[in-house]
Length: 365
View 1 (cartoon, helix red, strand yellow):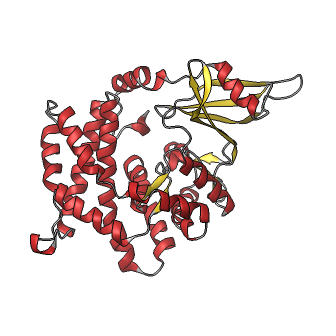
View 2 (cartoon, helix red, strand yellow):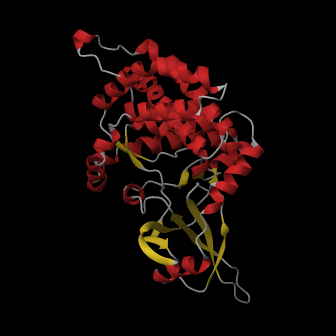
View 3 (cartoon, one colour):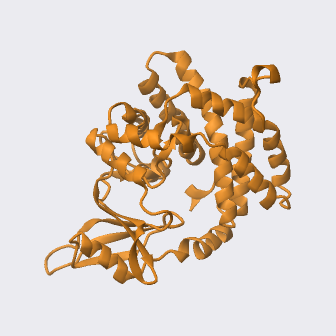
């Protein structure tokens, strides 16, 4: 549970509410799970209990049915997404990573399914994923029992991997087309919408009031800065959940062996892909980021420093969005924690953003 908190401590009462009221409502009946697997020719298996994953996303381990003298080997993971059907960007990005030789988890099957009135319909995304290879990086970091040089090598390799993922529109036609389709959505002003929502829903929470006011005062700077990076950089198909808990590595070499959980993939500025790592693994962020900047910018230190400073624009927006999600889930402490992160990022944004004057065509807010 510690990896979902942004406040540096757990809130068991909040997490319990989340599990019961949000997470727990999405459980597809076993007969529907079997029908989906049967459609792919996967039969005579044992389906495990739902794993604790995303709010409206179900993941189940699928094992071979054990026979005498044989182990019940893990075949893979059945993933069912209950909001919005199959995420095309998820499938495109996974397949593009595999085609480029990047260590994505292997997509074995995918179909647009949904359960309606006890029947399967065509709006829900179901995928079957091969097991990840290697050791989980987040668990290895938390245990502290692995060679620090190997861990640092894995962190650097993770940074280089993300840089390669962001370059996929240049080498993969499918990714380039997906980016083109998602371009309008990636230019929307969600910051204004999210701030308005939080000012309504958190107006009676004492800890939130000064933070929201602080963020409101910085909103014009944020809008100007975001418009600047949107015009400056090509869009990428971002993973959106890129952090150590979704990465696996070889404990002998530090090579990244698997990347999982592509469900949040979407079109955005590349800066948005640093939110999860900076929030949930701050102690390893610098090593990871330096490797990304080296891989992407090489010896162009000025461009690398500029990109690094601009990450706060996406970091502020992502924290504000996460605060909205946590309020929807009744996780008030978590929402306040994300507001703290957003406000701190806004403080770092203000000195470096030049907001145009009215005569220069100022952005209205």
